[in-house]
Every structure is written in C-alpha cells, then in structure tokens.
Amino acid sequence: MKKISTITKKAVTLMLAAAMILTALPVLSAPSFTAEAASVTGKGKINDSYVNIRKSATTNSASLGLLNKGTALTIHMEVFTTATSNSASSRWYKVTTGSKTGYVRADFVNVTGFGSTSAVATDALNYRKGPATTFSKLGTMAMGTQITLQLPARRSGSSDIWYRAKIGSKTGYVCGDYVKVGKSIFITKTKKQLKGKSTLAQALLRNPTGGGDARIVYTFDTSNCKKLFAIKGYKNAKVPQGFAFTGSKYYILYGMAAGQSIVTYSAKGKRLDASKFSFCIGHPNGITWDPVTKMCYIFKGNQKTIYTWNPATGKFGKSATPYSSSGVAYDKETNRLYATSHTGIRAYSTNGSFTHMKLFSRCSHGFFHYIQDCGAGGGFIFHGISGANKRSTNYLDVYRAKDNAYLGSIKITFGEIESAVVGNDGYVRLLINELGDDTDYIWKTPLNVNELK
Image (cartoon, rainbow, N blue to C red):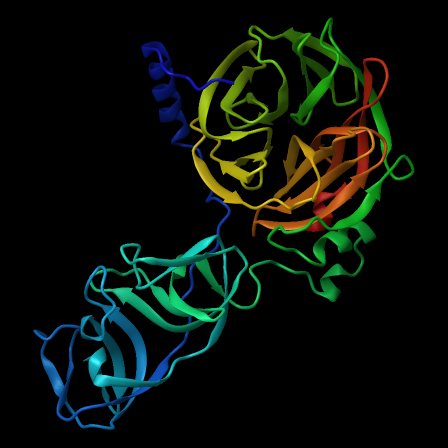
C-alpha cells in the first residue's frame, strides 16, 4: 500500500461533511491509565540559622517566619524554579513544621529520609533530572517496570505532577500520568472471581502481563472446536486472508497475486454475493466491519495505507495511517480500531480519521512468524500468528484492551489461522485456511469473551 500524496477538493469536502456528522457521536477514551496522586512525604532538618519559610517558592514571596537550625520538617513536595537546572539553589521544598506550612529553599534543608511507595510504569517511560520534559533524560524503562516513588515534584508554574523516584539503583523524575501506585498495572482475578469459569478462561485471567515471552495456556483442535460452515473463493481469488462480522453477515476477504475479492455470507453460512476489487492491492492481510461508519477497513501487510469498502455502494477507497500495520479489528466496547504489526498493537479512532490513540506491546514467540489478521470484541483483542510452516505452527494471542494486558496464547492444530471475530453469542470464531482445494472453513471455538470480563 502506498501513502496518498494528494487529496482532491471533492474528497476534502466529503471528509469535512463526515466530520460534522461524526461530532455528534460519543467518543470513548483510548485504553489508558488514570493518573493518581501518591501520598508520599519526606523528612528533613533546617541546616542554618534564621531561615525564612515563605508563602511560595520564591525569595520575593512573603516570609511566614524564621526557622532555627535543626528544626524538623515534613517535606510534601519538591518545586523546581528553572527548566533545566536541578541545583539546590534552584529547588524549593514545600514543608510543614509545627503549625506553619510553606516553602524553604532546598540548600537550607538536609533531607534525612524520602518516602517509599511502590508503583509501576503504565507505559514505556523516560526518567529525567527534573520534573519536566525540558530536563535531560537519564534513561528509559519498559511498561510494567517496578519503581519506588519518593516525593511529588513539579516545575514552578506548572500543575503537572511528577515524582522523584527510585528506578532500580538509579534516581530520577517520572511523570505522574504514567505511573500507578501498586505492584501491578494489570487486573488479576481473585480465586473467588475465577470460580465457576471454564479452564480456558481461568488460564487466561490468572497471570496478565505486559507482553514478554508467549505463554501457551490452551490448545484448539478438532475435539473442542466446531466447523460452522465452508467458504469458497470467487473466480481466481481462492486464498482467504481475513473476515469481518456485522452481526448478520460475514465478509470474507480473498487476496493473492491471482486476484482479490470480498465474498459475503449470511450468519448461517449461505453465500450471498461477491464483489471484485476495483484495484489491485496485492496481498491484503485483514478486514473488519465498523458499525459507526458502516464501512469495512482492510490492511495490506506492513504498509501505512488502510483501504475502505462500503458494502452499501460497493465502492472502494483508501487513506493514510501514521504507522505500518497488518491485521485490523473493531471493538464495540472500546469503540476503537486495533491494528497489529511486529511493533505491537495500535489503537486508532473510528471516526474515519484513523487518529493514533495508543500502542501496547505484543508477546514474543521466539521464532520467525507471519503476522496474521486479528479480531476483537467485548474489550479483548485476538491476534493470529503463523510460523514458517503455516500448516503446523499457529497461535492465537489474547489481549485485554482495558489495561493493555497480554493474557496468554492458544495453540491451533488444524490449519493456518487467518482471522478471528466474535459472534453474537460471545464465542470467538476462526477463519482457518486448510491445505488442499479452495474450500476452507469458519470454526467456532470454546473461547467466550463474556467469561473474560
């Protein structure tokens, strides 16, 4: 897929009209974490005689009184008065001593101890020499990294809360928007909450992570999955690459060098129609149905173009996206499009603008693999991968959009996985490409998204 270089005046007019209509639609927030203020304080003592405690963090501020050497302080916050320096003369502490609360310059305070509150990074995160992005970067930590918050901090004139934090053996400042108090950012079900759920659901909910190495928790085979119906190519298009589900229809995407088409089936498996592509997109990887825009979206592997298809008119189009992707899926619960690639899973807005909202990590299977299409539903994302031998090595990786958690992987033994959708009953369906002629099948699995909530 090629990035669009020009947009016609007519297209711009249509886009503006669509934007006016879509402003009335509810917009849900992207998967993210809520920033929270940590209750963490330090201790210190005045190191000189006749030190002013002031109303604000500046020598021009009114004095609230004089403090003697050795006066004990409770430190509530560290305030930096410059955008780049962390010298003691350019920092102040908000303190309490007796009945007075005010600010004392840091070079008049001996800190005897910082607070200690466990927290975790909710995204890939830089830590710096001071509480703003203007300060030099000391390092980067991965999502899920355990840190210790020592004291709230902020840049003078800013309301953004940062923290002085301990990251391993190092100390730096981290933005409060990307840390969460506690030992994990992921939602883990208790034994009581898991009681009564299937073995599969329990295995997926027991140990959510931020990615890392793949964890095989279950196997799909012909004994626990059921064939729903056969699908067949159209003319020269014989290899299925993905499918979408509207609730009443399946749109099966075919595409290889020999030809491309979208074949429509009823929910019960009756073939209804076939639409020949109006342009060659080579080898498409995935398709999804967006009930907000009433459009299907199609990605070709690892390119920055998303193709559109309007089932009502049969018309095709295309638009640029900021990142290369392969699989694509719409989730009603989060009202987001999810696109998968080797870099991770990206969330996009569904108003036709394809605004990038979030990136979270994928698990690693530790071998060469092909990125297949993905599915989504009920707040969960299902991503298919195939090994070098597509017929024997296939997995379905399961992610939760709410907290960006990887729940586990399911091995698939009966063919090459191409795509996944969630049916009206909550059960995940798979499109499996089988070895042989141009007849393949839609399978119903024992995985139900309602059990994962």
